[in-house]
Amino acid sequence: MFRIRLAAVIAVSFCFVLSLGGVIYWGSSQVALHFQRSRSAYEAFDRYERLSHEAYRYFKQRMDSLVIDSPVADEGLASSKRRLYQSMEELRGAAVKEANAGERQSMPADLERVARFTAFLEASEYRFDEIERLRHQGKHGQAVQTMTAFLEREIDGTFQPLIDAAINAERDHARLSRETLEALMIQSRWIAMTASSAAALFALVSGVLLLRGFRKPVEALMQGTDAIAAGNLSHRITLTTQDEFGYLANHFNHMACELERQREKLHEANAILEQRVAERTRELHRLNGELQRMDTARREFLADISHELRTPITVICGEAEVILREGKCDAADYRDTLQYIAGVSTQLGAYVNDLLFLARTELSDSPMDWDLAWEKLDLAELVSCATEDIQAMAREGSITVIFDEPTTPVWVQGDRQRLRQVLFILGDNACRYSNPNGRITVALRTDGQLARFSLADQGIGIPASDLGLVFERHFRSANARHTRRDGAGLGLPMARSILKAHGGQIVAASAEGEGSTFTATLPLVS
Image 1: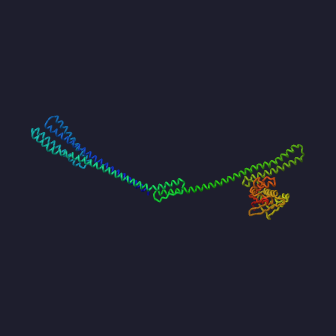
Image 2: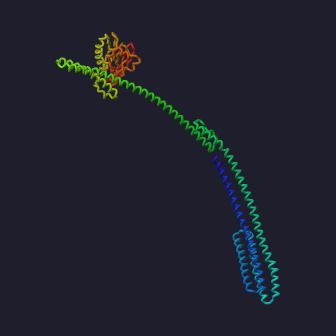
Image 3: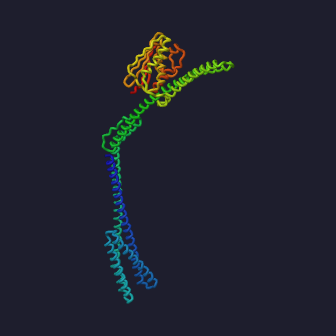
């Protein structure tokens, strides 16, 4: 997997850095160690040089004191001796300190030389004291001979080689430390260069391999994101690797599927919404047309009411004004005028009541609000009585009325006067718009739980374009207006409203010039 390869590269790089740091630390430690050794060697070299110088000064002053016996010489001798022993103590202290610190491998030889120097100084003091005693005893020749032997054997033969050997040893130590230090520096430089080259080569190779490993997946992912951003949700990333890029590609494809599915759902929802909006728009257009038609009907209705009410009101006012202008009228004239006014007022009241009934049935869905006198009645008897009234109206046009009467009672629940009004409206229309010498057929039958009443005439008929509007308030077809100018267009709407109030309905079937058939149904009761 990619993260394992990346972790391996990071781990190897860390090991490289750690190893290089360790090598540099070791090199720097070795350099510091050998530098310290070289400095210690030079310091020891200086101490031996100072010891040699102080020793020869002391020896010279001691010999001068043997020759010149003066307090000044003795004072200088004491000072020289003090400096000599101070140098010796410094040399011994440095040797002991280096021996305790373990800084040099030649510490036993150094301590041995310090011990030999110390022993030589003690022996030289003995020799000088011996020479001093001989001189005080007056044995000057023997004293000079002893001093000469001491100078040749001890100082030149013992002390000088010992100092030279110590100085040469320290010089060799300093040279060896310097050479080792230079070698370590060269070695550290080569190690650093080698490690840096190896690390650079490893970084280059691993970088190239990692780049080749994730360049193709990254390009595929970038192409996928560009395709999704451009709206191509059907695009899929084809990666068969089992690493993180393959995992990311699978999740990316899953996300694209979800987005595509959501877009399809959104398109479906938009289509449904557009369909519903179109349906609502059509419904609004239809309702708007209906409202316009109702507004037109309202205006026509108000105009018709104004027209219909103006005539009887004018008649009433006219009759009353005529009587009032006459001044002197007998009781019979007043009675006739009042009777006429009462008759016109009755017609006006009936017209207003019909309008109120129509309005009440259209505004309320509950039959209890329609002010009906409910009772159980025989519809066959009611239709039979209404047929006699229709026959009386049909005599004027020589129209024959036939009633197909049932053999058994037809019981319904309703208002007798209102149902009789429906029959009267249908019969009156049939007589008004039937041709002379025509025929009107009245039939009453039961159909399951319904009572079915029909009235058919052979009159002028209703045009097909007007058949759906005959039950609208104040509507009259063109041929009806041409045949009879009187009429308010309230009969059929009133009949439909009454039947609706009784739980029934009415339909019309007609052909222009051939007559019309109106069929009403009412629910039966037991």
